[in-house]
Length: 426
Ligand SMILES: Cc1ncc(COP(=O)(O)O)c(C=O)c1O
Image (cartoon, rainbow, N blue to C red; front, side):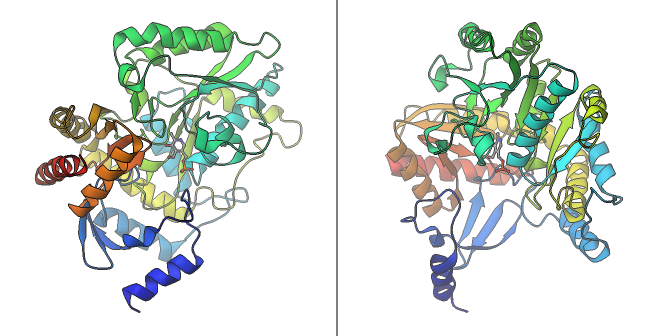
């Protein structure tokens, strides 16, 4: 079948997620990838720095081998009926990376489902211990998923929906512009905004605070050091749980295994997904304190958690996750992200003030460039693709998020192509 026919088929039948109907996404139709590079149907090769999922690069032999071996052995089983030998291994593997208290792992298929599960667990736990609460505190610029409950947590305009919010949510606005949020002076205004939100409504005491350690969709916003430590204290003062959304930051992306490790903090629940199976299969984890889990035998209907999907903990996804966790450890990818990220960030900072770039910020291999406006950011992403580099855009922010397996020569190529794109877009 010709490339033209494949494009026509896509345009005719596929409903692309998160896209205007007028957008033609078939310009880049990808067919294969190796390492940090991906090739389209016309034979063009791109260095891929556009995907937070892609932590281990394309066609990582250990992961693809594990997937195909598992597919021909046992592809999956409904974990509400029985179990398979990999689900417990993944749950243990995730628990080993968490603070000791978070030893219980629920597996789901996506970050969205995992965030909703975390809230359901928190609210049912509050009922289990006889203190029913439902109000959740989040960042207005946070992102926790696209279903009705998860999108209601966010105040980002593109997540607005026509329903009444099913949960009371108090959303905290960033007290300063995103580019000013990482400095120590941002800490006090930020904490006082959360303090006010926690005490907001005496009739509705807070159930939980749910935040990302680095705001992804909200613009790659880096928060001030010790924010999470102080937020934990505030949660304790108000009897609220602290839930951390590590969907985009977990498994090494920020140069630590989890984003919260930049601070000293013990969360109650941690949600993780993208890097768990490096994008090779859909999987997410909700890591929960054993003491929360232990209350669920009090549930009046089942004596357990009434939540799950038939593909939760799918065996092929578990095989991909186990191979990914082994690869992260063996190749020391967390240290690699820290070290490569530091030098990449230092070089990209040199672009501030050129080609309409107003700020560069990041942690590890999560590098964000803020532009004067959305048009400038869009132009930069288009120019980068012309130079063989795929980047991500959120509003006026462009993100360079390459695989943690990026080789030094690829990092040089990334920087060179990014520079040319920024120049051309100006
Ligand atoms: C921080 C965060 N939470 C939740 C989600 C939702 O995850 P998913 O797209 O897998 O449902 C995302 C996705 O980008 C995310 O970045």
